[in-house]
Length: 450
Image 1: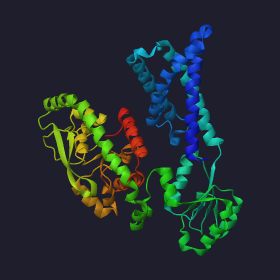
Image 2: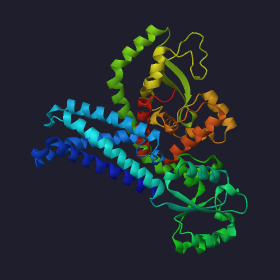
Image 3: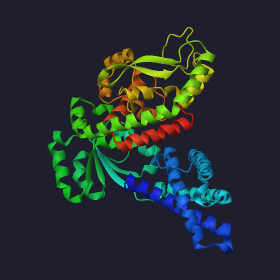
Image 4: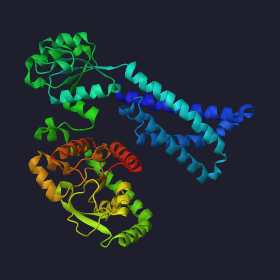
């Protein structure tokens, strides 16, 4: 049962709950006077609302299988998403008075019914996903640090639906990793375990016996997946252990991205221009508050390493005091940040002037965050292939910004950022860009980050 099918099941269940709740609302509200015309009058306005709700649920991670557990975090996030969706619905109906219905009371009844049915449905789904829905049976050939990380992911997230049947290894795996079997028994293991997929940590090119066992098992119709690709699928990161020059040659075939990159330039420019025109009047208010709160320029301009390490001037609203400021990296609880600057940072409004960088084609809305040149040079000395993160145009937001983790400029954190950035460069697409933008909105609304 693939993750895509699980997510489609989740979405389909939500859609059924949307319309079932509406039907029950109208039955309760109108009771004896209910007619088919009442349903017809409500279905299309509420369909617009349902689409809006699904977007809100998506940016709130309610369609992430990582959240498919019946714990306090799920109920908190679900309740917050419902509250935002309810307020958005009220705004929609009040701003569109010509739709022909006055759903004030209907909306409140609907919210109550939907909340009950939604949490009952999600509770059943989460419980079923963990306990009863079919598992994806996998075997792993070989053992290393990446395999250990994957096994840990399975333990922490049983709702992902993977059942590890065995690890075929010649004695390197520790006993607590699961059912360890000699790699010499691989052909027998493949035949006995009814597997959906085999994760290859060992390279079949290097072992004639391994190639023979896999070849002799073709009739079983098992999917063979390389360990790095499987790791990417379940973590959203590129495994650093697999990085070498051949990885870049095999995975970053830029000819496949030419049309996407050209389209991205167009929609980046159009969206940046719209945002610039709409928000320009507010820039004057922000500038006035910045000047009144502390002396110094309105904008903070800093050098950054752009695409292919080309240096450009990144523009932000100033959020720090200029007095005694050595412009070192921001620290937790940094006293240099002004009161208004703290608001600008929490809401990410301080980064609004970067639409100018996008209009200049120096940045994109989505991509690896641009690094300070001197820091990038130092990190390139410490971290192999760190400079390759500049193969894509830097972004106002990126995969690292929605990871839920704060990564400092330290070597250890920069390694994690590199994993996310290379995953984006390899897999960049319109869908991935839209997903990152929506999740960034959720991050800003939840006031996470620094």
